[in-house]
Length: 141
Image 1: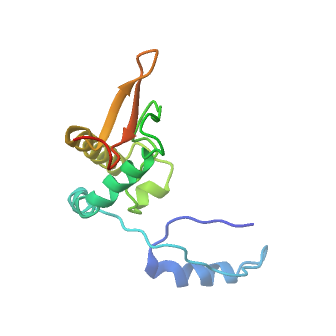
Image 2: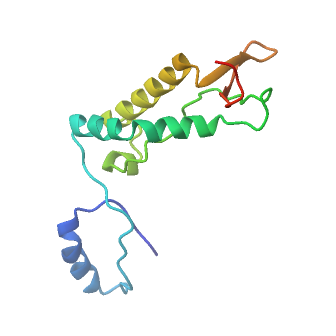
């Protein structure tokens, strides 16, 4: 059986000692996969600002198509775009945490900026729903 979750780095040896002395199971290994931080809101906004270009690139890559007449239809254009910053609230199932809201608002602001700059083109589908694609180098400005 495996279990995992965010743990304070200094408490890992203490937890490992406690699990090794258990009588009902055998601890085979303790693995560390990634390091996460518990950001304040100001620190998190600063981290998002540092990754602004990376987030914009992820959005553009998401809507890049092979043909100029091919568009991507999605209900929420930024739903599957993540900032790439690992934080404690992000790893739990609390999708309504303040940091999740800040991340979602920031990604939506980058989306609006790309739309305003013309990096993402918008068209209408037959039923009136919007469809999107990234501007290709051959598109007129």
